[in-house]
Amino acid sequence: MNIRYLKVIFVVIIALLCLVYAGQNVANLGAAYQSFLYVMSGADHTVYPSSFGPLITSPVLVWLALIVVVGCEFLAGLLAAKGAFDMWSARNASAESFNKAKKFAFLGTAMGIVVWLGFFGVIGSAYFQMWQTQIGDSSMRGAFQFSVYCSIVFIMLNMADE
Image 1 (cartoon, rainbow, N blue to C red):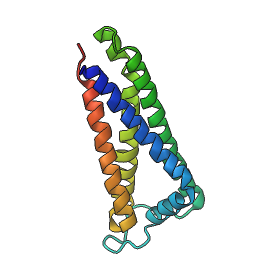
Image 2 (cartoon, helix red, strand yellow):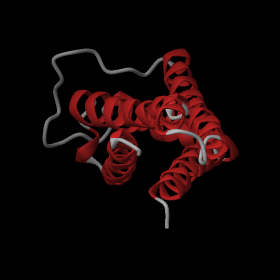
Image 3 (cartoon, rainbow, N blue to C red):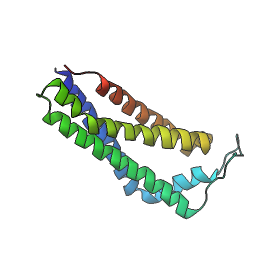
Image 4 (cartoon, helix red, strand yellow):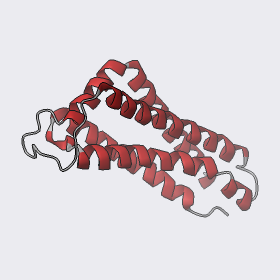
């Protein structure tokens, strides 16, 4: 099988991953808000009960964080979907054209890395210490998996096509 087809398939999978998770967050918006509030407020943090920065309990700021995360999940999915479409359209073109067609696929996978490594790994896990609770730890573990998936596809996309 031509490696180009595999790259397209993997980018489609990333697009679906991002869009399905964004959709699930919207379908469960109340629960998502409660999870964000729980983590951002530092509730039930017994191992590291203090933080060097402020914890967040303001409903406006929690909603804003949730909107940013879900919006970026949707954006990652849409960018990856556009990238997959562009790559599929260029699958029989020259290597140069196919490599240029990867632009939105790169942007989509990179945005997935920003969401799950940046937002969840750095802000959620490191700053808000979400690993201290079962809810936070489960989210953190899932985010790690998703950031790895996006990273692997990003690296695979970066491989030159002939």
